[in-house]
Image (cartoon, rainbow, N blue to C red; front, side, top):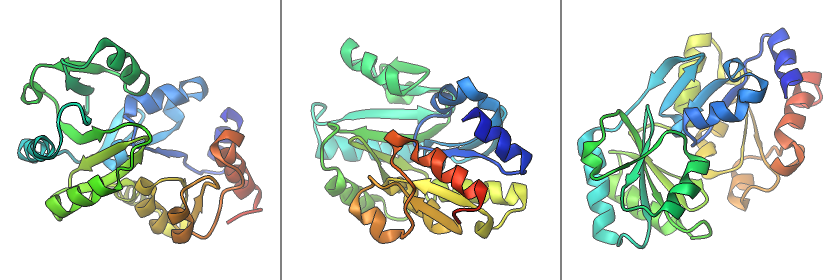
Length: 249
């Protein structure tokens, strides 16, 4: 990976990690190869950052957050799902979460805090995540949320039983649009690789989109080009390397 980043820099090509994860979590992934060599679109597009500089940020209002919490309380009990709120400075869950659950969440979220009330959070709130069991079918919940908050907030599935609610018109595409403006690029000059529903806007935006081979069928129906291998076999790196050699895109 480090060699690939050097090769990209030599060719004046930027590497962007776009994810539903927090920026802090993404930086930890890339720390071994140099976290400051990567630009981050985190929280499904809510924050765009590079080298400790926030390029773009779109937060939810307190009223929007409260509306989601009330909707969830109306449709589900506390045993049905978990509410997690992501902010610029950390992630927040109820202090009723068990130690076992907190241990699991720490694996996925850095700077994780427990709060008595979500209204106590003193942070810019980027997204509300509703988390069901990992193998749960969350599509019906997504459709309900989209119907309830159409035009008011953006709803997307993030995989592993998680549904994210963000400010309206926030997604990975809007993150790329902010970078395109900053770097004076066109979509035709961009490549994106994705595997989930929260990648679709981004993939439809760039000139050279690729879907991972193990993505759900609906992803392959939307995007015709397929990456060279799946995530377990260095598919992203192999695809980028082939593009740099001129064998793809």
